[in-house]
Structures are given as C-alpha cells and as structure tokens.
Amino acid sequence: AGGTAIGLVAITSSMELIYSLYKRWNAATWEKISVLIFIVLAAITLIGIEFPHGELGGLVSGGAIPVLNILVAVKVALGSWAVILLFIRYRGLL
Image (tube, rainbow, N blue to C red; front, side, top):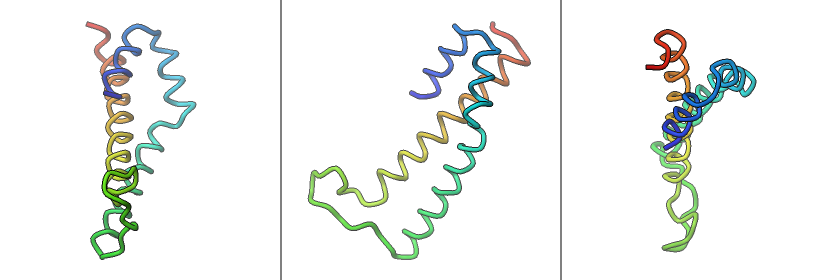
C-alpha cells in the first residue's frame, strides 16, 4: 500500500519535488536501517530472547511479529519509492 501511494504521488507531482523529498528525508538510509534492525531483532528472537507475551487479543500480544511486520512495511514502501523514482527518471512517465 505504501508503494502504491508513493507511486501515485510521484505520477501526479513534479519529479523534482519527489526527488527532493527522497533526498531530504534520507529514504535510502532509513531503508537500510530498517533492514539492519529487522536482521538484529530476528536474530535475537531466534536465539531465544523474546518480547514479553501480552494477553490474547491485546495490542502487543504478538511478541516480535508486529514489529517485524512494521519494519518490512517500511522497507517495502521506501524500496518502492526508490524504484519508482529510478523508473521515472530513466524511462519517463508512460
């Protein structure tokens, strides 16, 4: 969903605006940071150290899984943003 929204904004906005936002927010750096945090958190969980379990149906009852899902969503959205920017820059809007 994040990549689609960014793609639609990139299509309707100027390329310079989208590229300046990408650079100002350091999106490539945040994408790499989210991957590193994901790897570290997954390794810690695989070692056997877990988040405390909450009550069934509670917001934090999933342990590390919700955090890992959010990190994957950030990675996918920022990666989609980079791909869309490169595609528009080298191929133009179709």
